[in-house]
Amino acid sequence: MSALPAMTLAQKLIAKACGRSAVQPGEIVTCGVDLAMFHDSSGPRRLQPMLAELGAEIWDKRKVVLVMDHYVPEADDESRRIVRIARDWAAEQALPHVYDSLGICHVVVPQKGHIRPGMFCVGGDSHSPTGGAFGAYMFGIGATEMLGVVTTGTIWLKVPQTIFMRWSGRLADGVSAKDMMLAMIGRFGLSGGGYQAVEFCGEAVTALPMAERMTLANMSAELGAQVGLVAPDETTQQWLQGAGVSLRAEDLAPWCSDANAPGVRHAFDASALAPQVALPHSPANVRAVGELPHTPIQVAYIGACTGAKLDDLRAAARVLAGHRVAPGVQLLVAPASVQDFKAAEQEGLVHQLTEAGATFLPSACGACAGYGSVIPEGSTVISSTARNFKGRMGAATAQVYLGSPFTVAASALRGHITDAREVLS
Amino acid sequence: MRVWTLPPDVDTDQLAPGSTMKFGLDVIARQCLLGVRPDFAPGVQRGDVIVAGAGFGIGSSREQAASVLLHLGVAAVIAPGYSGLYFRNAFNVGLLLLTCPQAGCIGDGEAIAFDARAGTVTRADGQVLSLDPIPGFLLDRVDAGGLLPQLKQRLHAKDKRP
Image 1 (cartoon, each protein chain N blue to C red):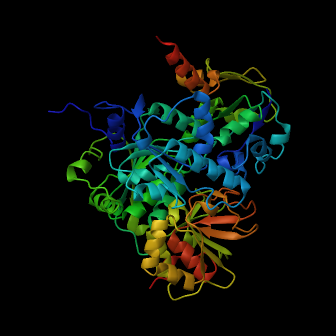
Image 2: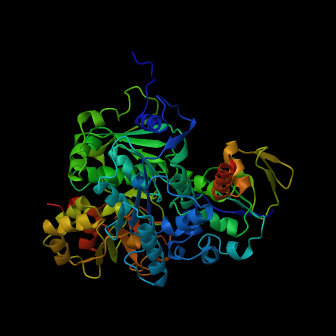
Image 3: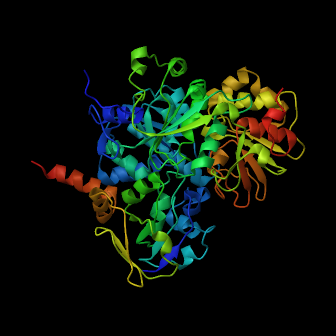
């Protein structure tokens, strides 16, 4: 009989990565890294000079993925310089996994089959917890820590407690994973995760498609968690099959929390959840959409790793197909990846959204990271992105509200922040 | 050491705005905390200390949000709590973060002293506040000037081995 203590999914993933049979919350351990992902902003331009200074080599190039998504398409000389460094360095290092201008890293990397259940991964970006949707332990680190990873293949970690967010029931039509996250962030705050592991579970989570699970894991960053995990299941298996990754049932089986694993437990009812909106200037400043006063908007933005995946575009098209956005509203759509954009084209969504008045932008981080200048000063914006800190989207005087793609589309249609359930037939 | 107080939940966009991220620390430094305390960047002196509310450094993984404070001469940040990602970044670039549950009682402009290894902050009136313990390896990292100098030392030590 096994003498192992009951463990959470997070503990099991860490135990595997540090070569132990069990780990306890609070222990500091050193883990081997299965995948190190970084982008043009956090990656080569910072790593290359430090590696040169050290005279060190990348520990295992097969485990490194580089994505150009922040400064593409290049808008000025500085962006050109940054992206040029990334391209030259990728060529010089002969990196086997480079995705240039194909979309945002947190969506492209799983779509290319790099993230699988049981892996231990780091990303040079704060939304790296997105990988937790696949039952991988994945978290964000800065450039200097990434230097440590790419030269040693290891990273230290304090084994976290797990906060279980159990969602019973089913979401209503027009309510989505983004609303679940905003509700949790509003309740627990931006530091509510305490840099511990959050695990999303319960029938409402199990019922979610992968893209929606990715939205949960993605915004674990705004909850202040180190990782946001969903135990892998048949939905994960089928999605990864489409990404060229074949998994057997026994590849998934080890990656779940034991029934009596230690942790903090919170319960929510998905069927009672209304669409949620975060008001300026914090993702934790959350109200149910119905509690807002009449709020006219000038810009509706569907973009980012958080809110512009294929499922998000489908949601927007369901609201907008056959209609026009309200006069004076600019609807901007930046699909999360080229793959999602092409799929949306094939499904007719791009046509429907364009007919409704949408302008399509490149599949890149764009306005979400404030790197473009598409958000006018003084405007009121409803956005499907993850953050609305003052100035985050590049305009210091913009008032940015966060909502689901359903909410953004419904608000574009009416010209003010709107409950999508009112417009969905 | 003069204290600069800041509110809770100061995010990385306030410390290092996205629009400045393509530039170096000298440009980022001019914009640092502009929207929160416009007097900070022009007025901060080498050795000054930031005393912030909880949730300091929430947001992005951009470590320039920590490096910029070093660049401006900040000796340490004292707060009841930090973003976990910012906490790691700070020690990796050599910025000392001290976790002090009672940080809120320290006033703006106050002269204070701290001893990270002893785990104390001494206020102008002699009151001693205690700090949450920091793992020794992280204090060593700050003393070494960050992770890069440590990696350099380790590589050189390896080279010298027979």
